[in-house]
Length: 445
Image (cartoon, rainbow, N blue to C red; front, side):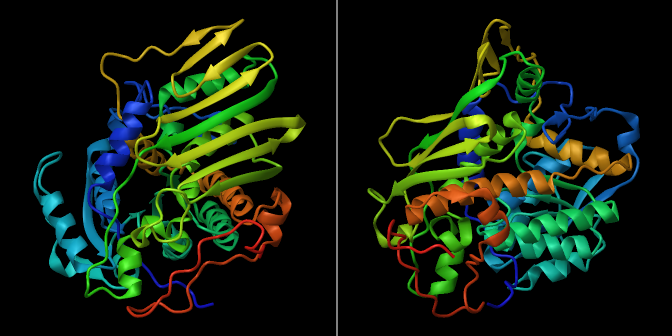
């Protein structure tokens, strides 16, 4: 297999639809105090975005993957902290660069940001152009398949990183992420992932109480991301197979990992955080019942997975993207002394708790950037690389189980699986769509 070359893009409308849905699904978006990130499930000291120390050095940011998600993250970063500027853009497609430049220059959320044409790069090697600029931090927001390559290149170039989730689509990619995260630790570089719940005070406060024993010993949990349809990019006559798949990346497993990985990873990350460990095994099922047209590529439209964690704790995981169905985005943890509904910031039982949203809440999508930049300026770089790699692999494990119909164990998927979804070449041309996975016929790799 060849090494994947570079930045592909995102699609318009994704940022608003995804983030608006998330924001309205959770009771709290963060509070006026900064929640800080977590390591091994434990909250670290928060960083106040108003601290004078944060106004010191200018942080120059380059964006790799300049679609809606990357552009939105760039605006979040500028809004999060003083003296932050966007100086370079990279994407597979020139039209995505131009749309991003227009959005940044519009001045709708932050003062207008003008990106010089000679700081914009397109093509499969666009990420190299961005990394060659005088940037301190890069935002990695190309489709998930490209994340391992881009992270490795960024860390080797000595750049701090904000990377969108998920961070890989297969076990080989996850192992690359873990290696890059360790290299970043050795080099004193920060890595923060787009798991904004870990920067949301409602989640932080509720998780802390779980870890302090408020619900007793955990005996089971459930997590869900059930919703309707998302955007889809239908094929234009002039597009090659590769261009169409990269523009319509949600619907191809090699690019997105399927929606259990691309989207449901948020909820699985919360479960791993609450239980302070990834699962031991998974057995799942899923299918493609409604979204069967060619524009929906080769991914499923529903999954249901049972994960088993240490001490016999079973977790029901469910995700669905089918219009006209009931919606639920939630995480629920059951203990011997109570029940925590993390998406609501509520604990019932012997030690009841309800997170009170303050009058002026802070958006956790912005707070995650504030925490990242503050950690860089203080010389105590956050590194969320391994925790998001493990949560991504948790979702991949569930997908592999559903695709094959087999029980999947953590040691195998973490160390032994050689599944690598890298296509045979990277150029605009023919790239046949892989068949839809069939349980009992799709083989383990």
